[in-house]
Length: 287
Image (cartoon, rainbow, N blue to C red; front, side, top):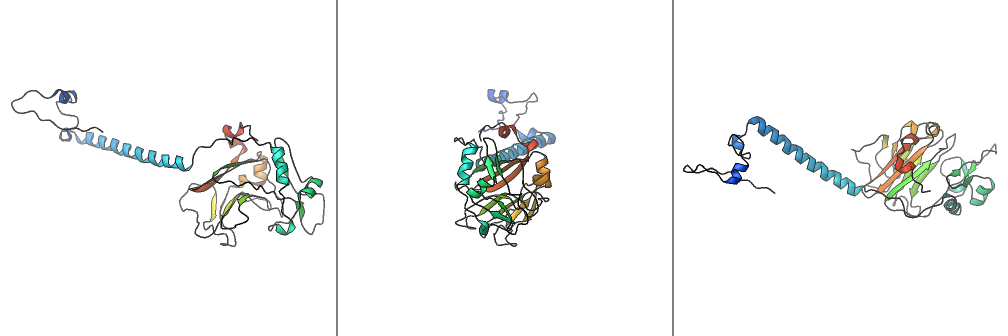
């Protein structure tokens, strides 16, 4: 911190201290003596002070944001997609009676293998419906996969090449606690139904006293702000993405990456179409 003081020479002295001479102007006025400043100079200095204050405030706010949303690093453990997908198949627990309102017959892992409803390679995995049977009364055969791993805060990326769409379909990618719902919440990162013409829906289902804040940055359209699971006919609070975020428009562009960030300060979901995926993701060799 710099402290300044004004010095006035005595009437009998023609000398001023050397430190005063050092910081005097050619007019003999001390630079910090406000009485000698012009109005223009005072305004300029005041403007600089305001800029400095704004800079400090913005820097502090951005610093807090960085702490709330930290940088991420790739998980230290390498996953081989084909192997871990086989583990998923062992966790199939849903039957036809567990389905939502989609017209589907969810089968177990054995039936899925027999009808080739799902398979994986080292670079991709496929989940699909059975399309050869006709005149079905219980819905088309398909599967629902569950990963029993639990995640706290973090950044999850899902690279999806093709999003299913069509009459009576209801695909969804979600995180939840099935043993304590809705108290522990549910996050739907990718969801649509039928032809998916309205874009991707991102939804929260929670217990009471949870709402989306009124002021936020978003590219989608808010449908409801009350996240209570039973509110608005069980709709929760949700954002609807642009039409290019799901279905035929997304598929024709090569799909995209669905990014979900879960932190104590909030939840963010973003969809990156194939041409907008940054190199740090595209160049990753982690399966």
